[in-house]
Length: 289
Image 1 (cartoon, helix red, strand yellow):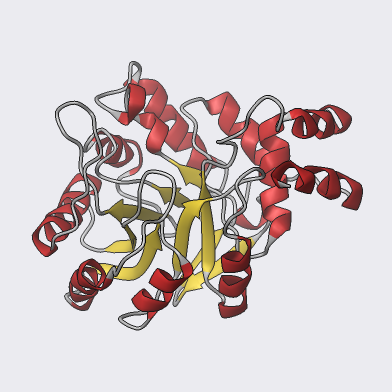
Image 2 (cartoon, helix red, strand yellow):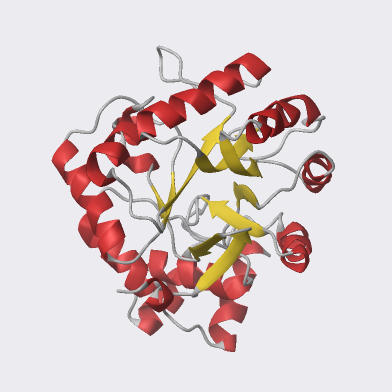
């Protein structure tokens, strides 16, 4: 499958960086709770190789997945990387011995995180580095200038091509943009969690990518009734419908659904090509009402 055949086509993320709107999130390749090694490393390698076979050239990762495990598996599976493969990573947190996610936003910690990503991925330069600054699932108020300036310095040193931000509000995006160009924003967003509607539209007007994580997260059984009805009507999975809705929501939305299964990966790719009718979209939009 060619990149242009993937659902949603492509999006110019910045400079020479154009990615398919259908990407892949590698978080689930680590062990349970994104901690430690996977039960089946060979299966994780197989998923990554299928990602490339399907024409997906946008892989989202972080060196704190595992920690280090996911990036090491990406390197094992795909290095030396195809020329058109773009790996996007995140910094701003670390893992403690209990599997927690404490913040790691000092200039020294960010520099170490960038070098860890470079080493474990086997790269000399990172395509995109997202600065994760908020809580687990929502932004926290306050300035992000100091950590973003630290990443901008690493960009000036040639270690990073492009910069993004994660788990941020509109004011923090604007603050980051006053320091260096921002090519993407990665926040929690899905059918049931639509706090970023205005931000998505504002970013689209600027040609900036919006990358939602937890594309099916946050539903209660009651909230998912409408999703289930639409899925049954279309003969598709709930995930496929949720992904298709995201692609139709705005042209700057890029998808990074994660899975550790080749079968689920293929389902995600084919399912996201669903065309939702106006009636389907209207019914799904009521989920967040």
